[in-house]
Image (cartoon, rainbow, N blue to C red):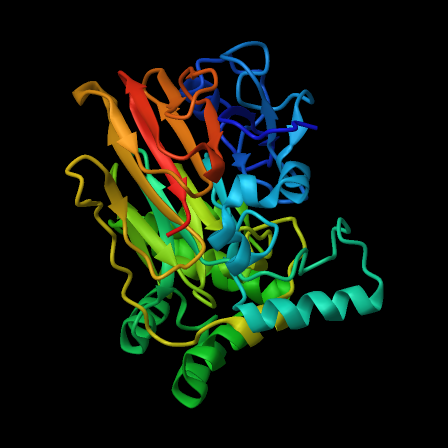
Length: 405
Protein backbone atom coordinates (compact mmCIF):
# COMPACT_ATOMS: atom_id res chain seq x y z
CA UNK A 1 0.00 0.00 0.00
CA UNK A 2 1.24 3.50 -0.82
CA UNK A 3 2.45 5.19 2.40
CA UNK A 4 1.98 8.70 1.04
CA UNK A 5 -0.66 9.39 -1.57
CA UNK A 6 0.66 11.51 -4.42
CA UNK A 7 -0.57 12.30 -7.92
CA UNK A 8 -0.76 8.88 -9.56
CA UNK A 9 -1.89 7.34 -12.81
CA UNK A 10 -5.04 5.21 -12.72
CA UNK A 11 -5.47 1.79 -14.27
CA UNK A 12 -9.21 1.80 -14.89
CA UNK A 13 -11.14 -1.46 -15.36
CA UNK A 14 -13.17 -2.02 -18.52
CA UNK A 15 -16.70 -3.42 -18.50
CA UNK A 16 -17.28 -5.58 -21.58
CA UNK A 17 -21.08 -5.44 -21.71
CA UNK A 18 -22.74 -6.72 -24.88
CA UNK A 19 -24.08 -3.30 -25.91
CA UNK A 20 -20.61 -1.75 -25.97
CA UNK A 21 -18.62 -0.59 -28.99
CA UNK A 22 -15.76 -2.73 -30.23
CA UNK A 23 -13.78 0.25 -31.51
CA UNK A 24 -14.73 3.57 -29.88
CA UNK A 25 -12.97 3.26 -26.52
CA UNK A 26 -9.85 1.51 -27.89
CA UNK A 27 -9.63 4.33 -30.45
CA UNK A 28 -9.85 6.98 -27.71
CA UNK A 29 -7.03 5.21 -25.89
CA UNK A 30 -4.86 4.55 -28.93
CA UNK A 31 -5.19 0.80 -28.50
CA UNK A 32 -6.00 -1.89 -31.07
CA UNK A 33 -9.48 -3.39 -30.81
CA UNK A 34 -9.46 -6.92 -29.38
CA UNK A 35 -12.83 -8.08 -30.74
CA UNK A 36 -14.69 -7.56 -27.47
CA UNK A 37 -17.29 -4.85 -26.83
CA UNK A 38 -15.80 -2.11 -24.64
CA UNK A 39 -18.86 -0.60 -22.95
CA UNK A 40 -17.53 1.36 -19.97
CA UNK A 41 -14.25 2.34 -18.34
CA UNK A 42 -14.66 2.90 -14.59
CA UNK A 43 -12.47 5.61 -13.07
CA UNK A 44 -13.34 5.54 -9.40
CA UNK A 45 -13.41 3.52 -6.20
CA UNK A 46 -16.68 1.59 -6.41
CA UNK A 47 -15.96 -1.73 -4.68
CA UNK A 48 -17.33 -3.70 -7.62
CA UNK A 49 -14.53 -2.48 -9.91
CA UNK A 50 -12.11 0.00 -8.31
CA UNK A 51 -9.40 1.67 -10.37
CA UNK A 52 -5.81 1.07 -9.29
CA UNK A 53 -3.09 3.62 -8.56
CA UNK A 54 0.36 3.23 -10.07
CA UNK A 55 3.42 5.41 -9.83
CA UNK A 56 5.27 6.70 -12.87
CA UNK A 57 4.32 7.67 -16.39
CA UNK A 58 2.58 5.88 -19.25
CA UNK A 59 3.53 2.27 -19.55
CA UNK A 60 2.21 -1.25 -19.79
CA UNK A 61 -0.82 -0.54 -17.61
CA UNK A 62 -2.24 1.99 -20.01
CA UNK A 63 -5.41 3.09 -18.36
CA UNK A 64 -7.72 0.12 -18.95
CA UNK A 65 -7.75 -3.23 -17.22
CA UNK A 66 -4.73 -4.87 -15.70
CA UNK A 67 -4.11 -5.96 -12.14
CA UNK A 68 -1.05 -3.95 -11.00
CA UNK A 69 -1.21 -1.14 -8.47
CA UNK A 70 -3.17 -0.40 -5.30
CA UNK A 71 -7.01 -0.49 -5.46
CA UNK A 72 -8.33 3.02 -4.95
CA UNK A 73 -11.01 1.98 -2.46
CA UNK A 74 -8.34 0.41 -0.24
CA UNK A 75 -6.08 3.46 -0.56
CA UNK A 76 -8.98 5.68 0.54
CA UNK A 77 -9.78 3.37 3.47
CA UNK A 78 -6.11 3.53 4.54
CA UNK A 79 -5.55 7.27 3.94
CA UNK A 80 -9.01 8.92 3.73
CA UNK A 81 -8.00 12.49 4.53
CA UNK A 82 -4.98 12.40 2.22
CA UNK A 83 -7.14 11.36 -0.74
CA UNK A 84 -10.43 13.09 0.06
CA UNK A 85 -9.50 16.04 2.24
CA UNK A 86 -11.07 16.74 5.63
CA UNK A 87 -14.19 18.45 4.29
CA UNK A 88 -15.12 15.77 1.72
CA UNK A 89 -14.29 13.04 4.24
CA UNK A 90 -16.63 14.66 6.79
CA UNK A 91 -19.45 14.97 4.25
CA UNK A 92 -19.29 11.55 2.63
CA UNK A 93 -17.23 9.31 4.89
CA UNK A 94 -14.22 7.30 3.72
CA UNK A 95 -15.40 6.86 0.15
CA UNK A 96 -14.97 8.68 -3.14
CA UNK A 97 -18.46 10.11 -3.63
CA UNK A 98 -18.44 9.94 -7.45
CA UNK A 99 -17.77 7.41 -10.18
CA UNK A 100 -16.38 8.71 -13.49
CA UNK A 101 -16.79 6.63 -16.66
CA UNK A 102 -16.14 6.57 -20.38
CA UNK A 103 -19.21 5.03 -22.06
CA UNK A 104 -19.54 3.78 -25.65
CA UNK A 105 -22.85 2.27 -26.82
CA UNK A 106 -23.24 0.53 -30.16
CA UNK A 107 -26.62 -0.86 -29.12
CA UNK A 108 -29.35 0.58 -26.90
CA UNK A 109 -29.11 0.15 -23.15
CA UNK A 110 -32.07 -1.01 -21.08
CA UNK A 111 -35.08 1.13 -20.21
CA UNK A 112 -34.17 2.09 -16.65
CA UNK A 113 -34.24 4.55 -13.80
CA UNK A 114 -32.28 5.04 -10.59
CA UNK A 115 -33.48 5.26 -6.98
CA UNK A 116 -33.33 8.23 -4.66
CA UNK A 117 -31.26 7.95 -1.48
CA UNK A 118 -34.07 6.63 0.72
CA UNK A 119 -35.22 4.01 -1.81
CA UNK A 120 -31.60 2.86 -2.23
CA UNK A 121 -31.12 2.47 1.51
CA UNK A 122 -34.37 0.55 1.94
CA UNK A 123 -33.85 -1.65 -1.12
CA UNK A 124 -30.26 -2.51 -0.22
CA UNK A 125 -31.22 -3.39 3.37
CA UNK A 126 -34.13 -5.52 2.13
CA UNK A 127 -31.93 -7.61 -0.17
CA UNK A 128 -29.20 -7.88 2.45
CA UNK A 129 -31.77 -9.23 4.92
CA UNK A 130 -32.97 -11.76 2.35
CA UNK A 131 -29.40 -12.93 1.83
CA UNK A 132 -29.19 -12.10 -1.90
CA UNK A 133 -25.52 -12.15 -2.89
CA UNK A 134 -24.32 -8.71 -3.97
CA UNK A 135 -23.04 -10.08 -7.28
CA UNK A 136 -26.12 -12.24 -7.94
CA UNK A 137 -27.71 -11.65 -11.36
CA UNK A 138 -31.13 -11.25 -9.73
CA UNK A 139 -29.90 -8.57 -7.33
CA UNK A 140 -31.50 -5.12 -7.84
CA UNK A 141 -29.70 -2.97 -5.23
CA UNK A 142 -25.94 -3.55 -5.29
CA UNK A 143 -25.18 -0.74 -2.84
CA UNK A 144 -27.03 1.68 -0.57
CA UNK A 145 -26.47 4.85 -2.61
CA UNK A 146 -28.62 6.89 -4.93
CA UNK A 147 -27.36 7.44 -8.47
CA UNK A 148 -27.91 10.88 -9.99
CA UNK A 149 -25.81 11.09 -13.13
CA UNK A 150 -24.59 13.31 -15.95
CA UNK A 151 -23.79 12.12 -19.47
CA UNK A 152 -21.61 14.49 -21.53
CA UNK A 153 -21.44 13.67 -25.23
CA UNK A 154 -18.12 13.37 -27.05
CA UNK A 155 -19.96 13.34 -30.39
CA UNK A 156 -23.50 12.60 -31.57
CA UNK A 157 -25.31 10.81 -28.73
CA UNK A 158 -28.94 9.64 -28.71
CA UNK A 159 -31.17 8.83 -25.75
CA UNK A 160 -34.76 8.45 -24.63
CA UNK A 161 -35.43 10.58 -21.56
CA UNK A 162 -38.61 11.23 -19.57
CA UNK A 163 -42.28 10.81 -20.43
CA UNK A 164 -43.86 12.82 -23.21
CA UNK A 165 -47.06 14.77 -22.50
CA UNK A 166 -50.12 12.44 -22.29
CA UNK A 167 -51.80 13.89 -25.37
CA UNK A 168 -48.62 13.35 -27.40
CA UNK A 169 -48.33 9.76 -26.15
CA UNK A 170 -51.95 9.08 -27.08
CA UNK A 171 -51.37 10.38 -30.60
CA UNK A 172 -48.21 8.26 -31.06
CA UNK A 173 -49.67 5.04 -29.62
CA UNK A 174 -52.98 5.34 -31.48
CA UNK A 175 -51.23 6.10 -34.75
CA UNK A 176 -48.88 3.12 -34.46
CA UNK A 177 -50.89 0.28 -32.91
CA UNK A 178 -54.40 1.39 -31.97
CA UNK A 179 -55.92 -2.12 -31.98
CA UNK A 180 -53.16 -3.93 -30.11
CA UNK A 181 -52.76 -1.11 -27.58
CA UNK A 182 -56.42 -0.56 -26.76
CA UNK A 183 -55.77 -1.51 -23.11
CA UNK A 184 -52.82 0.82 -22.49
CA UNK A 185 -54.64 3.62 -24.36
CA UNK A 186 -57.69 3.21 -22.10
CA UNK A 187 -55.39 3.13 -19.07
CA UNK A 188 -53.84 6.42 -20.14
CA UNK A 189 -57.27 8.03 -19.73
CA UNK A 190 -58.13 6.24 -16.50
CA UNK A 191 -54.78 5.98 -14.73
CA UNK A 192 -52.55 8.56 -16.40
CA UNK A 193 -48.93 7.86 -17.26
CA UNK A 194 -48.47 5.23 -14.58
CA UNK A 195 -51.62 3.37 -15.63
CA UNK A 196 -50.54 3.42 -19.27
CA UNK A 197 -47.00 2.23 -18.49
CA UNK A 198 -48.14 -0.57 -16.18
CA UNK A 199 -50.75 -1.77 -18.68
CA UNK A 200 -48.23 -1.70 -21.51
CA UNK A 201 -45.55 -3.57 -19.60
CA UNK A 202 -48.13 -6.12 -18.36
CA UNK A 203 -48.92 -7.30 -21.91
CA UNK A 204 -48.36 -11.03 -22.32
CA UNK A 205 -45.56 -12.04 -24.73
CA UNK A 206 -48.07 -12.80 -27.55
CA UNK A 207 -49.89 -9.50 -26.92
CA UNK A 208 -46.60 -7.61 -26.82
CA UNK A 209 -45.41 -9.27 -30.02
CA UNK A 210 -48.66 -8.28 -31.75
CA UNK A 211 -48.37 -4.67 -30.55
CA UNK A 212 -44.70 -4.35 -31.48
CA UNK A 213 -45.28 -5.95 -34.87
CA UNK A 214 -48.29 -3.74 -35.63
CA UNK A 215 -46.35 -0.62 -34.66
CA UNK A 216 -43.32 -1.55 -36.76
CA UNK A 217 -45.54 -2.23 -39.78
CA UNK A 218 -47.51 1.00 -39.32
CA UNK A 219 -44.26 3.00 -39.07
CA UNK A 220 -42.46 1.18 -41.89
CA UNK A 221 -42.27 4.23 -44.13
CA UNK A 222 -42.59 6.94 -41.50
CA UNK A 223 -39.87 9.58 -41.13
CA UNK A 224 -38.39 10.80 -37.88
CA UNK A 225 -36.23 9.29 -35.16
CA UNK A 226 -39.15 7.89 -33.16
CA UNK A 227 -40.35 5.72 -36.04
CA UNK A 228 -36.79 4.68 -36.91
CA UNK A 229 -36.08 3.59 -33.35
CA UNK A 230 -39.35 1.66 -33.01
CA UNK A 231 -38.42 -0.26 -36.17
CA UNK A 232 -34.90 -0.92 -34.89
CA UNK A 233 -35.99 -1.97 -31.40
CA UNK A 234 -38.80 -4.13 -32.81
CA UNK A 235 -36.27 -6.05 -34.88
CA UNK A 236 -34.04 -6.63 -31.85
CA UNK A 237 -36.75 -7.17 -29.18
CA UNK A 238 -39.91 -8.29 -31.04
CA UNK A 239 -41.69 -9.59 -27.90
CA UNK A 240 -40.68 -6.78 -25.53
CA UNK A 241 -43.26 -4.00 -25.01
CA UNK A 242 -40.37 -1.68 -24.09
CA UNK A 243 -39.61 -1.61 -27.84
CA UNK A 244 -42.42 0.96 -28.03
CA UNK A 245 -40.61 3.33 -25.64
CA UNK A 246 -39.78 5.88 -28.40
CA UNK A 247 -43.54 6.51 -28.63
CA UNK A 248 -43.90 7.55 -24.97
CA UNK A 249 -40.42 8.79 -24.00
CA UNK A 250 -38.74 11.91 -25.41
CA UNK A 251 -36.07 11.35 -28.06
CA UNK A 252 -32.98 13.50 -27.40
CA UNK A 253 -29.95 13.95 -29.62
CA UNK A 254 -26.88 15.55 -28.09
CA UNK A 255 -24.01 17.12 -29.99
CA UNK A 256 -20.43 17.09 -28.73
CA UNK A 257 -20.04 19.07 -25.48
CA UNK A 258 -23.73 18.87 -24.63
CA UNK A 259 -24.88 16.93 -21.58
CA UNK A 260 -27.95 15.58 -19.81
CA UNK A 261 -28.55 15.39 -16.07
CA UNK A 262 -30.64 12.44 -14.93
CA UNK A 263 -32.11 12.63 -11.44
CA UNK A 264 -33.83 9.95 -9.39
CA UNK A 265 -36.84 8.20 -10.92
CA UNK A 266 -36.35 9.59 -14.43
CA UNK A 267 -37.07 6.84 -16.95
CA UNK A 268 -34.44 6.75 -19.72
CA UNK A 269 -32.42 4.65 -22.13
CA UNK A 270 -29.19 5.49 -23.91
CA UNK A 271 -29.56 4.54 -27.57
CA UNK A 272 -26.07 5.04 -28.97
CA UNK A 273 -22.95 7.16 -28.94
CA UNK A 274 -19.82 7.89 -26.92
CA UNK A 275 -19.77 10.07 -23.83
CA UNK A 276 -18.37 10.69 -20.38
CA UNK A 277 -20.62 9.75 -17.50
CA UNK A 278 -20.23 10.91 -13.93
CA UNK A 279 -22.53 9.88 -11.10
CA UNK A 280 -22.80 9.34 -7.40
CA UNK A 281 -20.71 6.22 -6.74
CA UNK A 282 -23.38 3.58 -7.20
CA UNK A 283 -24.29 0.66 -9.44
CA UNK A 284 -28.04 0.68 -8.70
CA UNK A 285 -30.04 0.27 -11.91
CA UNK A 286 -33.76 -0.57 -12.01
CA UNK A 287 -34.45 -2.10 -15.42
CA UNK A 288 -37.77 -2.42 -17.24
CA UNK A 289 -36.87 -3.97 -20.59
CA UNK A 290 -34.62 -4.02 -23.69
CA UNK A 291 -32.14 -6.23 -21.86
CA UNK A 292 -31.26 -9.78 -20.95
CA UNK A 293 -30.23 -8.61 -17.46
CA UNK A 294 -32.46 -8.74 -14.39
CA UNK A 295 -35.72 -6.78 -14.81
CA UNK A 296 -37.50 -5.63 -11.63
CA UNK A 297 -40.58 -3.96 -13.02
CA UNK A 298 -42.36 -3.73 -9.66
CA UNK A 299 -39.46 -1.83 -8.07
CA UNK A 300 -39.00 0.35 -11.15
CA UNK A 301 -42.66 1.36 -10.95
CA UNK A 302 -42.29 2.18 -7.24
CA UNK A 303 -39.31 4.45 -7.97
CA UNK A 304 -40.18 6.01 -11.36
CA UNK A 305 -41.58 9.54 -11.67
CA UNK A 306 -44.80 9.27 -13.67
CA UNK A 307 -44.99 12.85 -14.88
CA UNK A 308 -44.17 14.61 -18.16
CA UNK A 309 -40.56 15.71 -18.40
CA UNK A 310 -39.06 17.92 -21.10
CA UNK A 311 -35.31 17.14 -21.12
CA UNK A 312 -33.03 20.14 -21.43
CA UNK A 313 -29.51 19.58 -22.81
CA UNK A 314 -26.87 21.31 -20.70
CA UNK A 315 -24.19 23.44 -22.32
CA UNK A 316 -20.93 23.94 -20.40
CA UNK A 317 -20.44 27.38 -18.88
CA UNK A 318 -17.15 29.20 -18.57
CA UNK A 319 -15.84 29.24 -15.01
CA UNK A 320 -14.56 32.37 -13.33
CA UNK A 321 -10.96 31.47 -14.17
CA UNK A 322 -11.68 31.98 -17.89
CA UNK A 323 -10.41 28.51 -18.88
CA UNK A 324 -12.49 25.74 -17.34
CA UNK A 325 -15.85 24.89 -18.88
CA UNK A 326 -18.08 23.00 -16.50
CA UNK A 327 -21.49 21.33 -16.53
CA UNK A 328 -23.72 22.66 -13.77
CA UNK A 329 -26.00 20.16 -11.94
CA UNK A 330 -27.72 20.03 -8.53
CA UNK A 331 -25.65 16.99 -7.49
CA UNK A 332 -23.58 17.38 -4.31
CA UNK A 333 -21.31 14.40 -5.08
CA UNK A 334 -19.78 15.39 -8.40
CA UNK A 335 -18.90 18.06 -10.91
CA UNK A 336 -17.41 17.67 -14.39
CA UNK A 337 -15.48 20.25 -16.38
CA UNK A 338 -12.89 20.42 -19.13
CA UNK A 339 -10.04 22.61 -20.28
CA UNK A 340 -8.27 22.73 -23.65
CA UNK A 341 -4.56 22.58 -22.94
CA UNK A 342 -3.38 23.78 -26.35
CA UNK A 343 -4.09 27.30 -25.07
CA UNK A 344 -1.35 26.84 -22.46
CA UNK A 345 -0.77 25.26 -19.03
CA UNK A 346 -3.68 25.33 -16.61
CA UNK A 347 -3.40 25.58 -12.83
CA UNK A 348 -5.89 24.10 -10.37
CA UNK A 349 -6.26 25.05 -6.72
CA UNK A 350 -6.68 21.39 -5.74
CA UNK A 351 -7.56 20.42 -2.20
CA UNK A 352 -10.26 17.96 -3.32
CA UNK A 353 -10.13 14.46 -4.80
CA UNK A 354 -9.93 15.01 -8.56
CA UNK A 355 -9.60 12.62 -11.49
CA UNK A 356 -8.05 14.02 -14.66
CA UNK A 357 -8.73 12.29 -17.99
CA UNK A 358 -6.67 13.18 -21.08
CA UNK A 359 -8.42 12.99 -24.46
CA UNK A 360 -7.33 14.03 -27.91
CA UNK A 361 -3.68 14.20 -26.94
CA UNK A 362 -1.32 13.73 -24.03
CA UNK A 363 -1.22 15.66 -20.80
CA UNK A 364 1.09 16.08 -17.85
CA UNK A 365 -0.11 16.47 -14.26
CA UNK A 366 2.37 18.06 -11.85
CA UNK A 367 1.74 18.95 -8.21
CA UNK A 368 3.14 22.22 -6.86
CA UNK A 369 4.31 20.47 -3.72
CA UNK A 370 6.84 18.23 -5.42
CA UNK A 371 6.69 14.61 -6.46
CA UNK A 372 7.16 13.30 -9.95
CA UNK A 373 4.99 14.68 -12.73
CA UNK A 374 2.59 12.11 -14.20
CA UNK A 375 2.47 11.81 -17.98
CA UNK A 376 -0.84 10.72 -19.49
CA UNK A 377 -1.38 9.39 -22.98
CA UNK A 378 -4.75 9.76 -24.75
CA UNK A 379 -7.48 8.01 -22.78
CA UNK A 380 -5.39 7.76 -19.61
CA UNK A 381 -6.39 9.20 -16.25
CA UNK A 382 -4.74 10.28 -13.01
CA UNK A 383 -5.88 10.79 -9.45
CA UNK A 384 -4.94 14.09 -7.85
CA UNK A 385 -5.52 13.58 -4.11
CA UNK A 386 -6.60 16.44 -1.89
CA UNK A 387 -3.23 16.36 -0.14
CA UNK A 388 -1.44 17.25 -3.38
CA UNK A 389 -2.76 20.80 -3.12
CA UNK A 390 -2.41 23.08 -6.15
CA UNK A 391 -1.35 21.40 -9.38
CA UNK A 392 -0.69 22.18 -13.03
CA UNK A 393 -1.91 20.59 -16.26
CA UNK A 394 -0.07 20.94 -19.54
CA UNK A 395 -0.21 19.28 -22.95
CA UNK A 396 -1.91 19.56 -26.32
CA UNK A 397 -5.21 17.73 -25.83
CA UNK A 398 -8.24 18.28 -23.66
CA UNK A 399 -8.30 17.46 -19.95
CA UNK A 400 -11.58 16.48 -18.32
CA UNK A 401 -11.64 17.04 -14.56
CA UNK A 402 -14.00 15.19 -12.23
CA UNK A 403 -14.25 16.65 -8.74
CA UNK A 404 -16.52 17.25 -5.74
CA UNK A 405 -18.25 20.67 -5.74
